[in-house]
Every structure is written in structure tokens, then in C-alpha cells.
Amino acid sequence: MKQASAPDQTQQFRHYDALTMFLHWATALLVLFQFALGETWGLPTKPVHHLMVVAHLTAGIVLSVVVFVRLYWRLTGGRRLAFLLSPLDRLCAVAMESVLYGLLVTEAGLGFAWRWGAGQSMSFFGFLIPPPFTRFSSGTLKWVENLHSWNAWLIIALAVGHAGAALFHQFILKDGVLSRMLPERSVNP
Image (cartoon, rainbow, N blue to C red; front, side, top):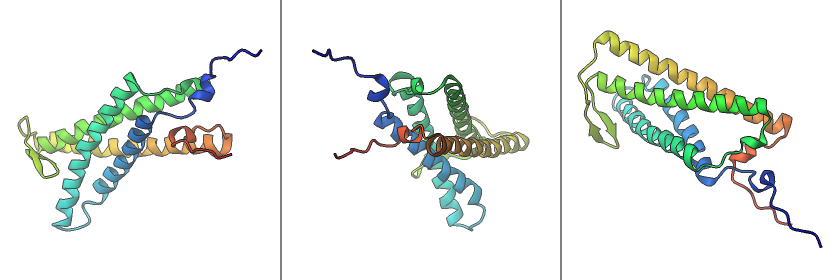
């Protein structure tokens, strides 16, 4: 009589949990949306320009919440699949993830500082959140604006590298890394 063994962890957990996947893809879409708005809002005239700025502010607040929920979930309950990676891949993945989290938190802080430092309220679906501190000098404000812009470009560059690495793993190495972040499809016999 064959004894039932404990399920193999590599077979049991081939995908991230649903909340981790949702937060990952929500972050990706919000980052792309934010970047597109920030890089193009200077093109149209009012009132479209104003609507784009308000959308950027609202999405920035939503992204800030998503990032903090994602960090909390990652540290407390999210499924980790690092055991499926080689030590070098694990090191690279953790490093990239940590840098991206750090840059996203920094970007949110810079966005709030830029808006409030200009003496303007943040807008969240039309609800105004007034500045909690006094205006910055014009030099400081320009410095914060430039950091916000450069940090955004760095996030995009690293996100493109992250996506490229996932595609490389999926289609060249064929190790299923990308499919772990996609909903599991049921296979009918």
C-alpha cells in the first residue's frame, strides 16, 4: 500500500495569490497611466489640461494606497514563490522588487511634496486636501519637481527591464515565471 505523501510545495503553489496578482497589475496599470498623464498634460489647453492634472493627482493617491497595501500584504500574507527561483534569480528578483517599491514610495512622497510645496491642494475625485505645510521656495519647488520627473523615468526604465526579464524567463528560458503572476487557467481533460 502506497503511503500518501505531503503535496510538493513546487506543485501546490505555482501561482501567486489573487490579491498579490491584483495589486501587481493594478500597480503596473496605474504607473503607466500616471506616467502617460505626466508626460502629456502639457500638450492640451484648458480645460483638458486641468482634467489631466486632476486625474494624475487622484490616480497618484490611489497608487499610493495600492503600494502601501501591497507592501503590507507582501510582508504579512502574500504568497512568496522565491523557492522556485535559482539563488541568483532570487537575488535579482528581490533586489528589483525592493528598488521598485522604494522608488514608488519616493515618487508618491515627491508628488505630494511638489503639489503641497506649491501651496496647492491635492485633489481626490474633486475632494481637496489642503497643504499641511507652508510653500517651498521656488528653487526647492523646482528641485522637487525635477526629482519627481527623474524618479518617474527611473521607475519606467526599471519596470520595462522587469517586464523584459519576465518575458525572457517565460519565452526563452520557458520556466513559467510570467505565468505565476497570471490567473491560473483550468485545464479540461
